[in-house]
Image (cartoon, rainbow, N blue to C red):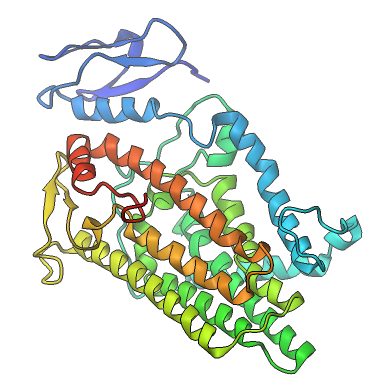
Amino acid sequence: MGRGRVHLKTAGRAQRLSELSVQTGAGVAKPSGNGAGRVSLIDFCEPSVPGGTEIMAQLEGSQAPLEFGGPLGTAAMLVLLPATMFHLLLVARSGPARLLGPPPYLPGLEELWSPRALLLLFAWLGLQAVLYLLPARKVAEGLELKDKSRLRYPINGNPVYDFFLGRELNPRIGSFDFKYFCELRPGLIGWVLINLALLVREAELRGSPSLAMWLVNGFQLLYVGDALWYEEAVLTTMDITHDGFGFMLAFGDLAWVPFTYSLQAQFLLYHPQPLGWPMALFICLIQAVGYYIFRGANSQKNTFRKNPSDPSVAGLETIPTATGRQLLVSGWWGMVRHPNYLGDIIMALAWSLPCGVSHLLPYFYVLYFTVLLVHREARDEQQCLRKYGRAWREYCKRVPYRIMPYVY
């Protein structure tokens, strides 16, 4: 399968790395002598060397560090993620509703298998696929991918790691992009439908939905509606531009999102909580602040990427980079490096507060989401450091806080 072999396109022809020697004013690019498939680069290829930039980009891609704990970490997550989702669903229905305790019972196989449910699942995915393939009024062009808009098939020799993260960056059949389709449509819209079904069920059981159930449904409907309204913005996310389409994104989009993000509504159905109007208004204020930060930061970033001369962003201070792009160092992005993550976390707290404080279970989402965003921020930092180098270090000096001002 060519393991341990790297091909580089230089001056219009491919050569084996073991046969390649690129002379530059700063040093020589040559293969490492210890370990199959490892590449060492002494200093940097000067831009004047034909193919030097392409060589650097491909070497950087081949040397990218393993993420999520490598093969062992991804193997553990393949088991723990579905198990965690089932645990949350079971304990939400139980009397004690203990997040850290064992579920009161384990369903039998006959409860886990339903031909009707499977048929509904395929019908739902089919409906979303048909809607996805309808002629669109606007075709949006995404950002340049890590492979310079050319599909790549990286070989690292570990099937578990590949299965978890995905070998294909943008798997497609014709114009049907599997990753883009799953990113927003079936899971996010399914999340809203599950919430609405739980609201209707509560009305059947108790005569009318509770105020807490209305707040959770309203907040999360706003969040999903925002994602669908600004659908084009997903093209700039790490999921689209960097991560492959493997178990992580497929399971996350199609199962984890609709069934764990609806945890608050599930909890309220089985554990109704009293909520007065003063507390409800306070929670709405928290939600409004979070959404204001989230939408303001994302809109500013997207406007600047589309048109830096737009009056709303033209006066913002920037740092030039070697790639030709500019890093925002004022406005929302001058407060912290990821203000949109801060807004996300504040909204996540607002979604959990209607469930009261008697149980930890409804706060699983805000705890999990905080960990997720901190981890994603660390991955993004590494990507930006490799991409922008000195400019990113300067940006970090100018904006020292990552997500929370004066805290982190």
